[in-house]
Image (tube, rainbow, N blue to C red; front, side, top):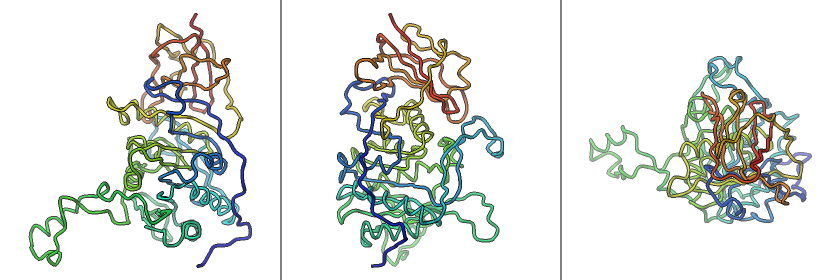
Length: 430
């Protein structure tokens, strides 16, 4: 069959890579604080080529679903919105920070990035695993040929069109208002929960069948059960979904990922996303009772995902009384430690079991958390985040008090301001 070639095309080289665990996150202070083996959800900072290489020894052939939303070959640089309360109609006044760049010298360079990563994702998929690749008109045609080569032409299940509305500056062509999602399976046997993704029939269809026995040439569908969605999906873009906005560029709506994860995985399955971005995959996977592994090369993406995860737990969207909130392992590829500087001494005060933030810091902080039993000299330097507060995504200030479930000899508090600076302060309790 035809294949796509270019001068620099090559198989991925064997990489020697490993993951370093930096922290565990226990939302609401719940969980076995030292039981690493029970923390299955991972949030990883690093180049996903090296991250996936490091995961191969443990996860090759074991991941049930991978959703990939890589750069689109748009040749743009994207900024993350970090301000709050600004007029959404005046982007020139927004407070922005570095997001990620989708800039390439040429198409060959872009394919050099994409091809080896697609191969590693295929290796990580279980024999019954499914893969969704999300692109648009810039490069989806090339990606489909590569996926036919890697998975096999017969393994393409759907070419899904995600369509949406929105303004466009284009005046020389039809407005480009859809993305393409290529749905492949690794083998003939795979998960597809058809009844879980059914949607209601349109009112016009219901009325037609109710008004005439001849409708449908005598073949009446099960109107109560609903229908399987077509391969074109309409979901509003996040710009129109105020409650979901994180400020991270090219964020995808939760309803889109909810359909994919519901259809192609079961509770307890492992869902992965190696271009995590704003963290939609992790958020939805946790809410649906799936385990997840997500990674991104940009610190801002990891921070957004972590903050979103904490806020969703605090809002009661995950876990609940019957099931504790999902716990999280934070890792990075390699041994390079994060740049953390000591915070000023009056940043946080301990009053009994309550940590009280200096009110003067509330406007500049984006996130803070605490380990109530910090023991870096014991040979275990892993930070155990037991309580957390994240700055509200839309309006309002960050919580200025955190109630500790217990108090150890030393309490380590880590803070992140809106510019991404990481601060740390240690409080003694003697």
